[in-house]
Image 1 (cartoon, helix red, strand yellow):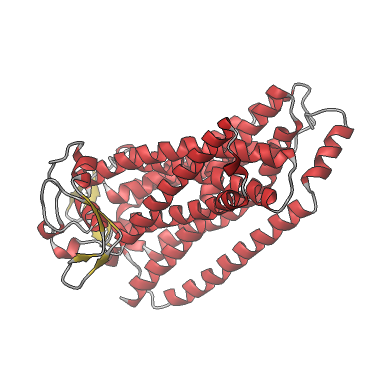
Image 2 (tube, rainbow, N blue to C red):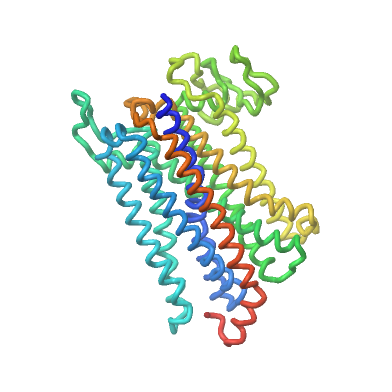
Amino acid sequence: MESVEFSRYLSMLTLSVHVVFATVGVGVPLFIMVAHWLGLKRNDDHYLLMAKRWARGYVISVAVGVVTGTAIALQLALLWPRFMEFAGQLVALPLFMETFAFFFEAIFLGIYLYTWDRFKNPKHHFYLLAPVLIGGAMSALFITSVNAFMNTPQGFAVLNGELTNISPLLAMFNPAMPTKVAHVLTSAYMTAGFILASIAAFHLVKGNRHEYHRKGLALTMKIAFVFTIATALVGDLSGKFLAEYQPEKLAAAEWHFETEGEAPLVLFGVLTETNEVKYAIKIPYALSFLVHNNFTGEVTGLNDIPEEYHPPYIIHYFFDIMVSIGIGLMLLSLVYVIGLKFNWSIIRSKVFRWGLVASGPLAMIAIEAGWWFTELGRQPWIMRGYMTTAEGATTSPYVWAMFIAFAVLYFILMVGTVVVLTRMFRKNPVENEIEKMREKGSVAV
């Protein structure tokens, strides 16, 4: 059991680190593309410089994301050998396609970075961003489909403990895939928007009133607001999916023990040893409505599910963190967008801008909480209905050493990334780069 627990801890650590770079890797290309398009359309140096600077930072995150992504693939084989032996034929296709999608993205990103002044028609340079955006999205699709398969496995039959009638495509396009992929993409675009907005807001708070930062903040907050709504809508669909395919996960997330109609939505609170919910905010009928679109729909409770299949009840807190931050960011961006339109002074206040600075870190915390909710909520299964986590794990007694080694590696990567990005942009302030662009007499540089 020690090897099982350390395998879980190491997988959790790797995923928690990788999701930071994966979210940036999926989300930022959209903002680079929009900024570049606006720069060309409006002949505006500021937007073109945004695209250029964001692309520089983006390539660093991609490079580090390769390391953490490779670690995930490596750990699937090392930490979960029985799972890979059992289901490797089914997940090999999306794992390979994810690698192909990454190379597709990386090739065009490299060309984009080093050809700013090589095209007679600047639009041709802009078109290079399309495969970068598509490659990032497809990479997310393929790797998320593996996770979705682990939640709703299909595309095979089991005969004498062996898989037969294997269909990798059917396995990849499993019932969980549409909502999971949609949630990953919308939340990545939302989070990337708030991260970029928080950087622009930080410069404004510190007294740098350059037009570049004001335009950057307005652009990123508008797009982020759109994707807060999209993420909420997809989240609603995800709740309906859980009610049908993983009722134990939904029930654990809501501390819902009795199967009943008119089920309330439980927010926050404390769970006693006798499974009594105290100090919670309960919204009557809300859970039934979210699941069934009516106030009397029956929601399965944990008491009707064998206890050995209950996920850890702690996922309730991760779910609350994710939803609370998401709602808060939606309201923050809504106020900003309306305030920008009607020229409200509040959005230029220092207090509000500090809220904008906090939006990036908060969005990333929500992403982390969401993944912890997703992965812990699948327990005790590594492949739901077919293999438990304990059955799929390695029996090696040295997983603790791997955990320490990878923890040190991730610490170096995280610190190194912060140092490199900080030095990169401090040595090339916006004002200097704008001046150099205008000295050359062309915006397309």
